[in-house]
Amino acid sequence: MLNNNDILSTIRMIDQQHLDIRTITMGISLLDCCDSDPHAACRKIYDKITTSAQDLVKTGEDIEAEFGIPIVNKRISVTPMALVAGASRTADYVPFAQAMERAAQATGVNFIGGFSALVQKGMTEGDKRLIAAIPEALAVTERVCASVNVGSTKVGINMDAVALMGRTIKAAAERTAQRGGFGCAKLVVFCNAVEDNPFMAGAFHGVGEAERVINVGVSGPGVVHHALQAIKGEPFDVVAETIKKTAFRVTRMGQLVAREASTRLGVPFGIVDLSLAPTPAIGDSVARILEEMGLEVCGTHGTTAALALLNDAVKKGGVMASSSVGGLSGAFIPVSEDEGMIAAASSGVLTLDKLEAMTCVCSVGLDMIAVPGDTTAETLSAIIADEAAIGMINQKTTAVRLIPAPGKVVGDTVEFGGLLGSAPVMPVHRESSADFIARGGRIPAPMHSLKN
Image 1 (spheres, rainbow, N blue to C red):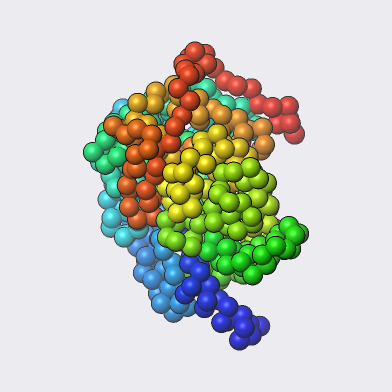
Image 2 (cartoon, rainbow, N blue to C red):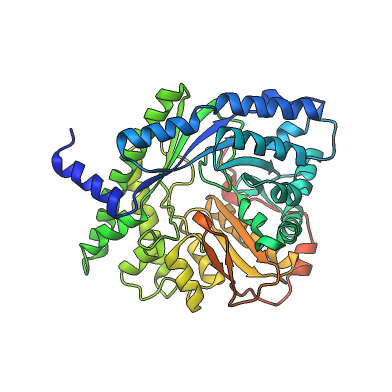
């Protein structure tokens, strides 16, 4: 039973420490929307999404009002569209994204994910068509998010797909050049993508999931930062224990909201993703947590060790607080969405190479990073390959969300606004990786993938 101190502590976390439910995401299977007629398929997609999620936003708002818990986003994820559209007799997959957009507008959600393809071992014709449609699809929609899984621990890395995604990112940036390459902010390239991720832009509803499901993503960097301020100078075992206890409290709130939404919507509860998801707001930063541990600036020596401790403690505390923890669950380090990361990158202390090292021990990977507009497609592909290799070898999810900002150079800033924030343009190595990417083929899976 909650006592008065617990209640007052939760109120303080919400009012003063930026604690919120980052998203309620409804996953919806569209497998029954396949149709040889693309117009019929798009109509089925719209009808299925709007029928399934018609009460999602209102339910989230009702829970927010009744419990006093901020629920920032209400979102939808759907079956990877390459699987659904593949049955249709058409080479143009942009209308499928437009059907998703219309459904998102009708339901009132802020993002819909699942314009996706899973190509870790090879590409079908449907996969190729979907990837070809990504630049235009992201340019003509506001709420549609795309993702492509190019590798896994089990099968290795599809380097043909990696090369293709470098070119696709460049095309998406050029197609949305007037908005700083905004299309790339809605595009994620994965290794070891998970089927139940509620966070955008990489969310999709996996084929192993139920017909519909409710997944919730919590967020509490500000709460963790505040807790660490009370134990200045204490040893790391005390730091870890403090983070664990804080993550437990944050995740319990997520579990409460997830169960309530599931009951009210009549949709099975899926998972709570206990990731620390920052925002551009002051005091809601993962970077500031790391600096509170004793680093002068995030990115200096010791940053990877501090992040490893944070990520592990968050998982240990959160897993005890929910009946089903899933998604990505750890600590996100998106540069443009984290006030402390923005400051560290702008100062030159936080570099692309250091971020790559940090992703070995945290959730996802190189996230929301702006690079010069003249960065080649091959360089983008090589960055993707590096991150995919980290995920493949370490049996974890890694991802890349790069924005080669048209017309921008190192030192410039790209403004996206809202949760997407602003990204300082970071330098990349100018030496060519073109011959490496041109080899194509597949990087084999590691030995430890043989677990059958």
